[in-house]
Length: 266
Image 1 (cartoon, rainbow, N blue to C red):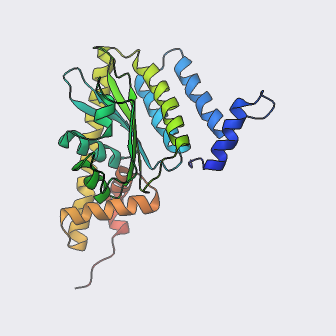
Image 2: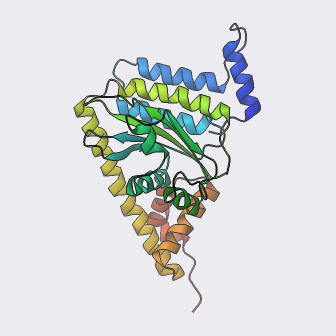
Image 3: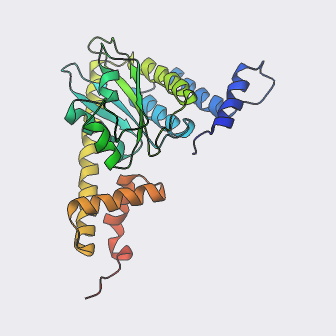
């Protein structure tokens, strides 16, 4: 799926405002799918959130990575749903440094939306911003999910990252806010059991992802005689260039390295 450009967004918005004589465009179809998911007899919160992040990546111009941050009752943060493992790393960078737009948007007293198109030098987040830029991401947009939620309901944020600087336009803000509304509707019905399941699923995927990424890093370190940071950078760059999820790329290397490896000269 590809992101909608500004001309496509303008055309699709015009379709929304029309009297229904035209066929629905890609944006309308995506929101129709989301609405059907929410109206399903027994949708899981995880399924709705997964569709929200995939839709966001597909329809928001400039979106390369999308994730959802949830704020637990004990005020800790985690990422239950994401489009790529790098999004989890960028979210974790915010959690570890206690700064960033997703934390601010997820807090009860935080803003409804936070963004930056110049992360490398943005004074709002002096640790997260340069860290994200060093990983190849220069723009971020975060919108609040149920900021005033009371336990067992969870507040959170929808996070969108872009490799380009100044990536997000007013149209991107509009779509992000609409998608955040869908995610908030799903979270409004989340009980403590579902919240625990979401966190458990996140932890399981995180462990599995770290394991396979660690295997791929080890293979690259051995074959290319590079250190761990350099190996991860190779994985990250290749993932971006091929438009393949980092964990999927790592799994391919781990599973098929004997077929893919080229012997180094003596």
